[in-house]
Length: 256
Image (cartoon, rainbow, N blue to C red; front, top):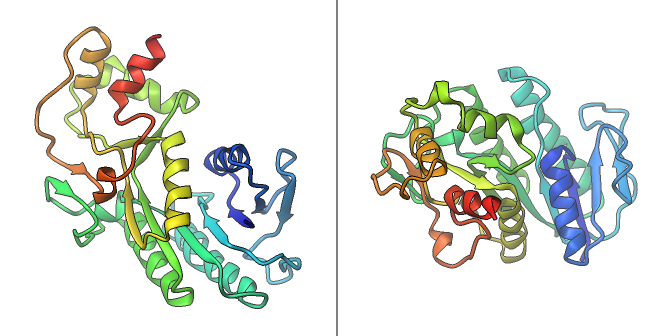
């Protein structure tokens, strides 16, 4: 099994370590050197002078890029132009690999449905969601053998800024409903989708919550039962088992 991970940020490194734990020896690709990766390719996809080296026959290519800036030009340059260049370069060598593209639930920002699964048509409300939706379509056109994974927010003990925000007392009454998935579960999700070639999935644990509910629970309160105003719930949740089915169980485990 030959795998290429494109994008080596926090999640890319975590996914690399996940695959290594499963016995794989994945290739990685990014603009900068990565000492932790055994088979790393340094390549700037936005530089015409940079080209890919000769690669073995690839089974899976995972694209998990992130823009340098939160601007529309940066988003489109990263998710559309860089990804298009990647596929064009790979197609010079091979075309049979399966591709998995990490997108985001931001494509549903404008949706008002209380329960969103893969059957719901996305309605982006800003340039982030629109750019990602355009990127999904562009990639599918370039390489039809592609799975799209729309991930919700990520949490883990290492994402300290998010954890601090979730338990910030000043945000206790923030009414926003949050949909998250643990980073380890997203790694499992991506790997599963790559193997099964699931065309579209929403990677979220299926349990929306508010900061008030979370802070009350950590303080010793009951598990909330209130119906969420907006919840992502993939049809795949019926068939897979997450390590952390919701953030409340993660809190229980961190207490041990």
